[in-house]
Image 1 (cartoon, one colour):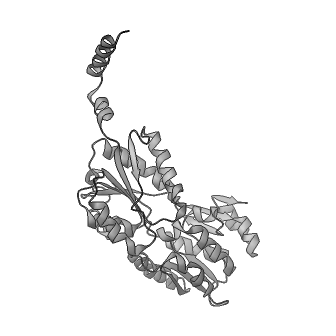
Image 2: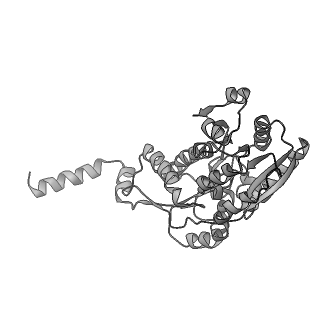
Image 3: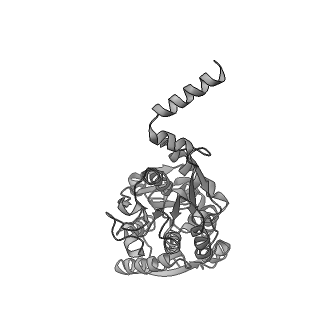
Length: 326
């Protein structure tokens, strides 16, 4: 086949191809920026997101380009990073965490945002409603009105004599500060006293847990936080040194060695986000796509960690667990 014949065949194929396919071939890769708090372990989040996007037919570098340079290490850096991100020509932003989502929604009203958050997006002020967000942000929320109460109940089942609980939370996150007040109200209704254990930055994790005096509390409730999630190996290690019964917010902590967790699978949130990304890249408006509310919450117990710290997990709790890690 000579060159001119080959060229005519190529032109004919393009003429017969669907317009959308031609546009996809000619269009530059979609620029997807990710925005959250992370540590050196953020590749797991990105790996899950990339894998999920491949199931929708998107691969790097041809179809998409994931931009991770705006990921930061602490809450205080989020506003500046969001402002910088808003000036860049990206097609879409994936935000993880309430504080990160609020920061980036304040920074831009024009770039579509797919959020993954544990807080009510309406109360955060980033959506008009779950069914019709009405703004440039949509996605998934892990919120549950009674999840803190259930987490406290399973903790009391693990430590039936519990009267005082240490509430470990990220004090630099406004949503976490609001959340700890709600937790205190729940604990008070159950006649359980709360001692706050404040952690501002990853560097404070070890020192903050070391200050929990022996006998001061009977157990630890570790609040959910993107900063904690990003540094979960370090956090789990510091909690283990207290040798106290403890519960965490999602199974990833139990997989990292935490004694027990009750909550959603956070990495599933990134899989769900891929579906939202697909819809938006195909032309849907974020303002019109309903926000999904997680409905599956798992109780995961790490039996090996329990044996290590000398805590006997009641048989009734083991029987109720969705998974027992040995």
